[in-house]
Amino acid sequence: MTPPNQSRSPTQPSNPGETEVGLPATSMVDESIRLITDNAQRIMTWDYTRDRDQLVTLYNKAMSSQWNSVTDLDWQIDVDPERLVSEQPSGSMHLMTAACKIPGSPLATWGDKERIECSIELFKATLSQFMHGEQGAMLTAAKIVETVPWIDAKYYASTQTMDEARHTEVFAKYLYEKLGDAYPMNPFLDAQIMALLEDSRWDIAYLGMQIVIESLALAAFGDMLRRTNEPLLKKLLRYVMADEARHVAFGIISLGEYYEDLSEAELKDRQEFMIENTLRSQSRATTPEVWERMGVKVDEVVPFLQQAAREQNVHPSAQFQRGFFAKLVPNTRRLGLLDANNGYLRKAWQEAGLMEFEFADDTASEYDSYDAVAQDRAAS
Ligand SMILES: [Fe+2]
Ligand SMILES: [Fe+2]
Image (spheres, rainbow, N blue to C red):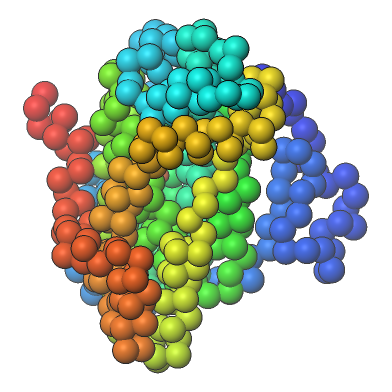
C-alpha cells in the first residue's frame, strides 16, 4: 500500500558511506527512511527458568488474546469521514466556530463546509500520530526483546512486537483505505521515540514506552472511543486498547522488580526522566500541515484559537490530560519512583496538582478489564 502523498523510495542510503562511524545517531536517508543508532547492548541469556510468575501469566494471556486484523475487523464497513467528524462532539470544531467570529480572524470567511473539512484533516492528523507511535512501539518492543536480561520478559516483549505490528497495520489501513491519506509524525512524538530507541539503558525504553507513552495511548484511544460512533473504528480501538493495557502491565511488573535494586542516584535519573516527560514537555506539537492544507498559516490561526479557548472557557485537551495522569501516576507509584530520594518525584507532581491520582487503579491491577477480545469471544 503506497501512501498517496508519499512515493516509494529506495531503501538503501543514497551514499553508502553515510552509515559509517561519525554519522549522527539519528539521521534521515530520504523522506521515507530514518536511520537510528541504538546504543544499548543486546543480551542473550542461557537461563531459561520460568520463575517470574506474573510475566508468565501475562505472556499466556497475550497468546490467548491475539486477534486477527483481517478477520476480526469488518473492513467492508463504509466510512463517511464527514459523518464521522460531524457526529462526534469535538472541542476543535467548537473552537473553530468561536474563532471565526473574532475580528481579524483568518477563519472569518469559514462556514460549516470548511470547518468540517478541517475537522476531518485534524482527525487524520491525530490518527496519523497513532500510526507513527505504533511503529515506534513496535521498534521499542523489539529493542526490549534484544536488551532485557530475563527470558520471561523476552518472551512477553516478542508478543508485544506482534501486537504493535498489528496496531500499526490497522491504523495505516484505516487512514489510507477509509480516510485517504496520512500526515507526517509530529516533532514532539518523533523526538520522544527516537530518544528511547537510542538510549543505552534498557529500562529507559521500557519506562518511556510502556509507562509514559502507553499510558498516554490508553488515554488517547479511550478518549476517541468515547466520542466516536463509527463501528469499525470503535472495534479497532477496543481491540488495540486490550493489547495496550497488557503492555503497560508488562512495564509495571518488570520495572517494579528492577527498580527495587537500583541506587538512589540511579533512581534519581529515572525520576528526572519522568519529570522531563510530563511537566517540562507538556506542549504537544500541532500539525502545521493541516492548516497549510486548509490554506491558513499555523502561526496566524493559533492565537485566535487560543483566544477563543479563553473566551469560551474551553480546554480541548483537559479531559484527555486527566485521563493520562489518572493512568500514569498510579502506574508510577507501583514502580516505587514517587518516594525515592525523599519523594523527589512526588513533590514535583504534587506542585503540579497531579497527586490526586495516586490511588487511582493502576494498569497492572486492571488490565484484564480491558480485554475486549476475550469479552467478545465469551459473548459469541
Ligand atoms: Fe500499540
Ligand atoms: Fe503497546
